[in-house]
Length: 104
Image 1 (cartoon, rainbow, N blue to C red):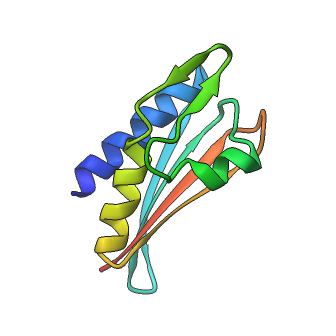
Image 2: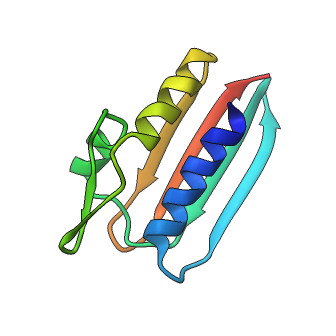
Image 3: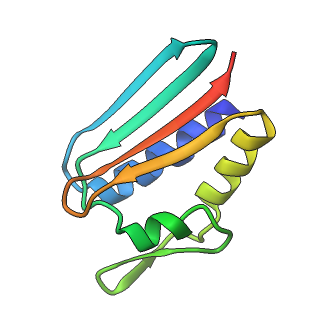
């Protein structure tokens, strides 16, 4: 389960970051395991941040639609089923930070 979540979040970071670096930070804190994936890509608008965890929601890049709109939806469902959270922090042209938190 955790590996599928990591692959999906990392795939999105690679897809949307272009040539900008990606960082992954994994650490325990207060009985929780945190996985943070940060990219230096194009960022996600506030409107899209509200939608990206919904089933079949896709982000449009230029004139193209990327993905099927299932990856983050499935990831969030798996994380929540295990008592955790999956959140995004992002600003246009400043990249995105995806934070997975799971109980230890």
